[in-house]
Each structure stands twice: as structure tokens, then as C-alpha cells.
Length: 206
Image (cartoon, rainbow, N blue to C red; front, side, top):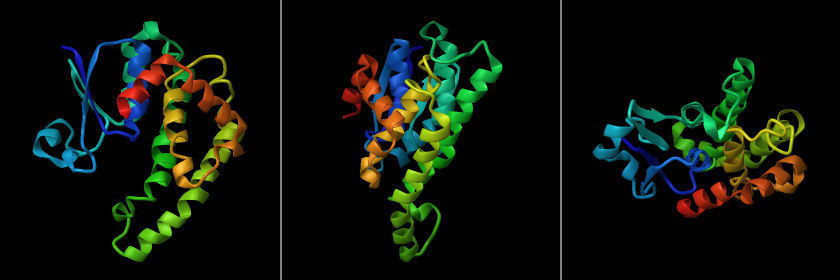
């Protein structure tokens, strides 16, 4: 069974798609019309009851959540060397970085357009949106100062942390944050854009 990858354009699913491209595996990409609500249709909810992307259908079942999909790709295709899977502590460090992006950075970003997840009052939505430039800048200040070694997240070795950081970095401009404030992140962003696998994934995401 070949892999089937469900994604929405300009979402966090890009990180997993980059990893698939880096691994050089065959997969079928299924684009969902997120604006039209296709992620909430019965057909897709049968794949992912959460009604979100990404989702990766494998021979063993369906995987959801970006950190889990990235970890699966790294471990299922070890020849691609996308993570230090033979070193439990180093692999946990990669997971810790990706978990921070998932649990904190992505949530900061989502407050801009999905305030309804956390509040009912329209005035609360506006307040959340105003906070986004500050919260995103604070997260990337921490990443720049303490979490990215350079040139890749974990130094000389490219890992599944890199496509995930790149995906989040693509959101900065729209969130009112100048990436130039973070030299290591900006250099990482440029390097990522030069990788053929990234270029293929971005082209498919358009």
C-alpha cells in the first residue's frame, strides 16, 4: 500500500510533506479545500475524526499530528537520515523541539484566526489577534537564542525539526513579525528554500 497524505494549502502539513520528499518515498497527495470545509465532511472525518490536517494513511493505519508523522517518516525510512533514531536522548531532543512548535508556536499563530477555539465573545477574538505579533516574536526569540544551533536546528545534521521550523517561519510575515530580527532563523529559512525537496513540497502546496 502506498502512502496517502492529506493536506491543506498553507498549513502545518507542509512540514510533513517536505519530510516525505526528503525521504524520497512514493505517496499520493490529497488536497483538501480547507476554506470550503472539506476537512469536516463525513468522508474526511472517517480518515481523521479531528477534522484537521495533516493525516497520513499508512499500511498500518492513519497517523495524525505533525510531530508523530515526522517521527514516523524518520523511523520508517532510516536511509534518509532525518533523525538520530539510534540515539534515544538525541531523538528525544528532536521530539522536544517539534513538540514546542506544535504546542506553543502553532497555538500562538492560531490565535490570529481561530479565537473561537478558546472564547465565545467577539471582543476576545480581537484581543487574541492583537497579541499574535508579540507571542510569535517571543517564541522565535527563544528559538533564536536557545534552541537553534545553526546551520540546521541541531547543527550540521539536517533532521525532521528543520522542515517544521521552516513551516512556522513562513508564517512570521503574516503574523506581523520581521524574520530579520532572528539571524539564525533567517539563515535557516534561506537554506531551506534552496533544498530541492522543499521546493517540490512548496510547489505542490501552492
